[in-house]
Image (tube, rainbow, N blue to C red; front, side):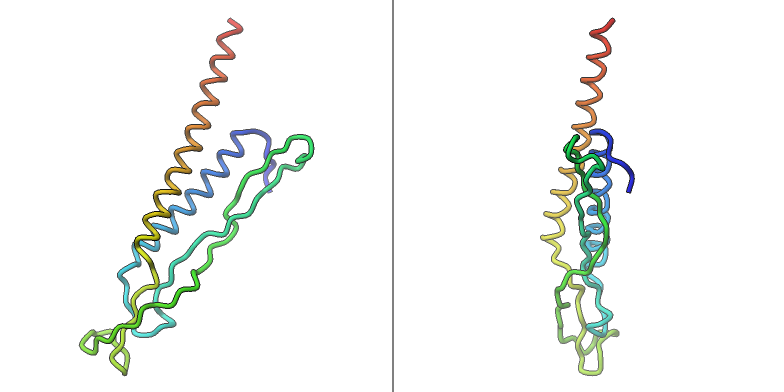
Length: 138
């Protein structure tokens, strides 16, 4: 694990985690209308698993951040639809729609993008404060 030294490390890790979250949302939305001839082959939504990463000197600094450590499939069953005329229908005439809730994914996308923007604002504010501090010494 890379050392967490300052607020830039914390915000960078948080933005990276939110980017992973946005990428999984994009994948889920891109596959939301996929159909399959079997339940096993149907697309299932994926979500990142986050883990808190503490600085090595946590007791002195109190610094912690987050990392996306794994991507897992959501435990949701695909929707079974009777469509015997569909080219991918199984022997019984059923197709299986992707196990993706589009509304849930859109909410996830909004929240992840807001969190990403919040971290950009933290970095921008910190840079501005650092420049003011430097200019005070002139």
